[in-house]
Length: 628
Image (cartoon, rainbow, N blue to C red; front, side, top):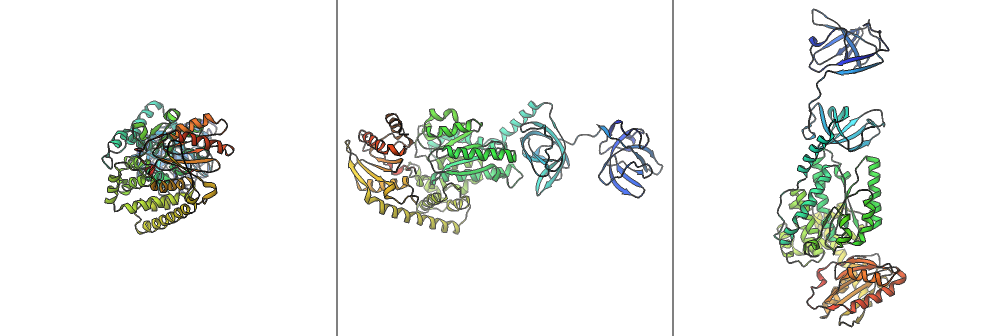
């Protein structure tokens, strides 16, 4: 063949293995070569690592630079070992690959020195940047970003979609300190079922939670342990699959004691799984919720974030994790909204549940009531154990948190003393724990819908902040105490009292008229504090109702109430009043339309007057009052 012959022919060009020798090359055969040098008298090319030669300038058909690909054919091997090639000008050719494929690796095996490798797995994310297309490959041992370049900002391999099982070859390098594969070839695998099976086996093995014992010896925890392990396994699996977790928690002490340890554990696990320091920020988002249920507004906001992340960054839709709320019929509209997008939902809660209403909408539901227990096992107690199952190393940092959760939610569980004793081994006495709870609640009030990650972690002291923790805790705890005293002093004189037909005393306060609205404490907590003070002064059954234009908050001692059932009865008895609500049996909140407030409160009073008196009923001093 001459240097310019067959310019329009389609050639079958041989690509030789890196260790091919000169003896393997034949005359009149096109070979793929790479330019390794340009000199005045021609170009030097490599056909393999050991076969190099000169294309003399007299036969060159074009201009070349180092790194260019060129098609050549062998002309001669001289006595001194020098090799001469001619280049072949072709407009189209088909590569006959004689090269051995790069060795197959797992992501876990890949290092910056791995060189050329083959990886087989599932495409978990496709992100188009202003330069390359970054494809995240998951083979069950880890995840790796693979950069494929077509043109700046142009999608490479447009026929490849998220969820495809593929084989990728390329060179391993580091980009901004992170491992990355520079893609050379990417194809779908011939047997995706086999690759999926191997991936599933690897993921299932890595998702298994740690083997740990409960922080304290409590039979109630042992009964719930399989549910906690299932949740930990599911959350680990989400991180392993590069799927975000959106944490929604009640904005109070127990809710934060539940959410922060889980957030920390998932962040640590994400750093372990991903070679990307930004992975926790992309995968884990924590958001407080003011209402004691998943409001449709919050669900729409979460969904909007998820859809935007999918469109901009190729992320998969998240799992939503509800903490210290999420068990009731009030949550159903929000859940149904997410169900249209196949977003899984998990719940850890200790409020009285409506299992029949939510069962078909939840993937995992952890609630002590489902195991014959009650609200005394707080959500924070449970979630600290889940955090330890995800990352057992977190245990020493959070062993005081269950005691804070229990005290913040006023739990009088028989095992509270064990939690307080455990916190003592970490250097926290009862006064410290109570102050942390007050500070958390005060911070949550002013943070509103913001997560406040820095200050919340400092207050809860899960980072070993030492003196800084104590200063921040004292500042917020003293602020909470002063604000509470001011609220009580100004409000309690306006409480109206009456004796009910069943012998109980009913205390009523118009919160809208006689409290400092939109200041700390919120209406629910104000009602609870007033109830505690009045109940301590009276040796008779007592109910306290704090009400506003469209809500009422209830607390009861010595009266057998079932607030969730009462809500249903009020809704049925007062069509058009828009009655909803719930909570614990003797502590809860009710919502209604403003124009029917008098009807609702009147009918509610009738039901409370007809309720059974039970002097032996456990005091609600150990039951949290919902904010409203």
